Image (tube, rainbow, N blue to C red):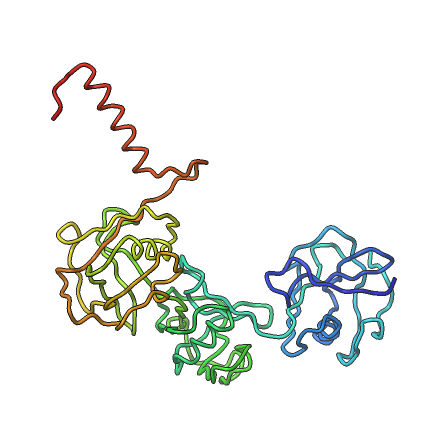
Length: 349
């Protein structure tokens, strides 16, 4: 059987630990001499993009369990197969499995961090074997939409916030004055001042929000309170007109409460908010993953005042097999106690 190659243990199709098939056995590749040119040949063999190939050392994608097959490939980067490279031979006894090499074929790896939801957070870019941040200078909605598109999120209403909204990052500020046109499939293809060329500090790290940002405020616990939505750079409330259980379910789902037992709260149980009041004539089915997936006539509601602000209580579901909620369990306990008490006292208050 010939020489084969694969990428394993990555989170995407174009990344992972490099493993080589030789003599019917898969083995890893040592990181001590692997070059970008070697990585380009491996990516070409796999039919993947050979631009912006990143070589990752020290078992970045795990060490694996099989022996190390090759120490170095010595490719020029132009070969179509590693068999055409000038490597010295099979096996490398001094290279340990914790030195297994990984690669990312084509494309710059990006992520959103430091938020409870994966669709929002501080924008970080992986370059030269290290994660770094992006400066908010000249960052605009097109840049945000490009980031959301690359990550596979909603691009209908992307938003960005400067000034390290989701906290300051560490290491380098990799990109400054990012200038995407909205068609890029790789942030590395957008214009910028160049990798690592920046006068920004981490106090200007940019954050991106790919889905609607929502929070519950002034509640008695994290799972309840007045609903507030972040849109067009500011927080606003939601009007109670036509608000029903389906809307509450969607909001709770966005917040990570995957249940349909939400309670609707109105003033004066909840406090009144300030600023804009969002969503006019909103209609949700209850299956939507984001409130913006519901239909509504306008973002801003001109027919309500803050006396109509709505709140919810997203009941936390336990991890038991019957998935009964805490409030239901408490209700049953109270009922049993009441029955027990009434067996000794016929008076019911």
